[in-house]
Each structure stands twice: as structure tokens, then as C-alpha cells.
Length: 562
Image (cartoon, rainbow, N blue to C red):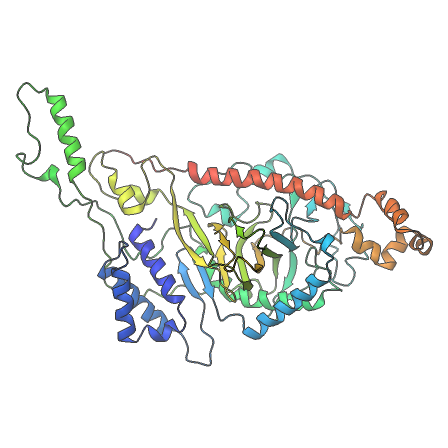
């Protein structure tokens, strides 16, 4: 649990590290003085000591950055650990991604654009894991350790055994995931889906770079090879940021043992009327009952006393944390990554995006521990942020020494209320073009609203999202599930011929008759059926988001009296 002033310091350092060449400017006394004056004069609760700490910390961080032409390392933004980089992905690679996705989009007819349900045709799902996921009781999974490859995943469509429904014990068990065990509390009910699981692809990292070895769900492995290579590059570039994001979680409970810039363990008041002369404040009137008098005096105490806000001390370089490396620890085992590509498209007729809700990624079936977001194209839109909040460790509040029945410090110092939700909003990060952003899946996040900058022209924001599965756990992946898309299967001559020996005759039939024949094929799954199933998945996950939000809100501070 961080003080509001520490969160303000983190937000100030985030804004400074958003500035071009901040690591050079931070050592320019004239520029630094200007930043100090702006911060102290901003009207926010920022003191000179707070700004001095921020500058000293950023000067220390800048001293660790290698001189050009070496690339700047990623920047830690908030305790948690949210990590951002505007240099991890080169301008050349960004252009390659823009061109490859544009070509991919151009091959999709307007009538087949997959607008995300209930998005008012503003969110275009290019590749989304909710389409053709693992469906318990329907999806076929290869048995006896068999796996598919990028070359045969379509040919083997329909092979395998039907995935059984998970048991009730499995769907209620929280003990299997490091990500949820790292919470201070486990208040979430029914964290597993009994119906669906997003399918990750397998990623080989044994040679220090990512190599996708099983198909990305909903991205054809043969027709979209250039996009596969680019996603591999993004995974490779995300790994060092994931290392930084996950390092603090190794062997720790979430949000404990973190270095505090402003520690707080004792409540002080100034003025402190309760410890002042009895002659100060209201006096008892003749014929006034004692209870009435002390009630008036208590009200005066509460109105008069002021919590002394804590200040940081002097910055000192932190102890070096143990290094963490996904490649070193899991190089032989490999990673599993869920891939999503999505656009938010705005037009003069639909000029605003209202933002999203607080959520984490996936359900427990996916065991997602961290996310990487790459914003490869932003055009004609206002500034948008991705905000974060976390569930506090309420034990921190019990370590604070405070007078009996005095709870006002909790809101003044930490922004929380006695018997209120133990949740802190820690800040947001600008989602600018070219930025690579990673964060752990124990933080809830929310996409902020934005609109067209020039309301007479269209605009967009386009992202690649990579969801890292807990590398300690292997979930069913596309290596275990041959392609489920009926359209892919039908377009593959060898696979279709295996089901219909007279395929040549079928192929010569009118499209209407071909469609009629395909409707009789229960598996692989048609696009129409997949979209119906997606609505079921979305409804289930919508309820999960509600439950997850309630779990956050229902975990409360309850201060014990002494």
C-alpha cells in the first residue's frame, strides 16, 4: 500500500520519462529547475522534498542507461511493475508491422470484417482469441503427447479426442496459479470457465529469440507467414520487459516487501487539539449535560485537527534486485503466448470511443501472468491512457500506530476509507504510437476514452496484444488442438478430400450446395457457429469481470481498535 504522495511521485516520474531525451535533460540544471518549479506550482500536493527525490531517482536511473548508439532500457513506471519503452521496437520494424497488417486488412472483404460484438462497429477484431477457442465437450485434442506443426495443423483438423468438461473441483480451485496466489487475499469465486479456454501458441526461446512452433489461433500459418515473423520479433522484444515486470513477483506475495519512497507507520496531527490545553476550544455551558458537551468537543477535535502528511527522506540507490530471465529459466521449456490484433476505428459519424472497464486478462483457465501491448499505429485521435489499480495489502494499515477510533488518516494519507474498498488507483500510461508496454496480470487495467482530433476525418488506434501464460504451467495450446476453422479445412485440398473422397465433384457444385453440405459437418466449426459460441464466451467473461471487480471492491479496510 503506497501513500497518495508516493503515487503522485510515481506519476510525476512517469510524465518526466515521457519527455524526449529525458535521460539527458535530467542532468541539465536549468531544465531540472524548470521541471521542479512546474511541479511545485502545479496545484497538486507536491512538495519540494518530493520533487527532489524524483529528480535524484531519475538521475540515478539515467546514469544506468548506456551511451548511444546503445538502445535505452525500458522504464519502470509504477510499483507493480508496469514497464514502458519507446525504443524497444525500431521505427523500421514498426513500419514493417504497419505495412503487413495493412496488407492483411486489405484481403478482408468489407462484409467479412469482424466487428467486436456490442462495439458499435468501432472495434475491429483482426485476430482474437475468443473466436474458435478450446470448447470443452466439443474441441478435439490430440492424445498421447501428439502435437501439430505449422505445416500440418490444418491437415489434422478433426483428429484427436473431445476435450472433457473440467470437474467442479477444478473450476473452483485457486491453488494452481502463481498469479492469483500472489494476491493478499483470494476473494474471487468461480475463477475458472467450465466452457472455454483461449488457445495460446507455443514459442521456442531456446536460441535466445522467439520462434512460433504452433499456429496463432485465427491467423493462418501458411497464408500469413510474414505476420508470424513479425509477431515473433515482438515476442522477442517483449521478453526483456516481461523479465522486468515479473522479477518483483518471484517468491513474493503481491505488493509486499516493495521499497517505499514514503514509509508511513505513525499518525501525527498538527494542530492536535486533543493533546492541547483543555481551555482551548468549546467549553461546557451551565446546565449542559456532560454527554452533550463531549459530543460537541469531539466534533471540534475532528474539525480542527489536521493529519501531518508524510515526506520522503533523501534518495539512496536501491539494493540490486536478483535478476530474472525467462530465457534462462524457461529456455528449454518454452513459452505459451496468446495473440490478439485489434483496431479501434473512429469516423466523423462515430467520433468517440468511451473507454473500457476495469479488468484483468482472461480467466484462470488461461493462467495469464503478464501482458505486452504494442501500439503500432495511432492516427488522428486525442491522447489516451491505460490506467491501473491494485488490491492493497490491508495488513499494511494495521502496522500504522494511530489514536483510538481515529480513521481520518486512512483517506488523507492513502486515499482509502475505513470499511471501504481496499483498492488504489495507481496511475496511467499514455498509449502513444511506437510504445511497447508490459504489466503483470495482478493489476486491473482500464482503457481510457479518446476521440477524433479532427472530427472531419477518420482516425484509429491499432495494437498487437501478447498475453504470456504462466511458464510454470502448461495449458492446452494450438500444438494440441488441430485447426478448428471449417473454412481453413475446406480450402485445404488434402484435408477436405479425406472427408469427402469425391471432393472434386463437391467442389464443382454451386456455392449454395457446398454451403449446405458444410452445414452438415459438425466439426470443424463454421464461422457462423463460432460467432454464436463467442457470444456465449463473452457473456461468461462479462460475468467474470463483474465478479472480479466485486472481489476488488468487497475486500475492505477494517481497522481494529486497541
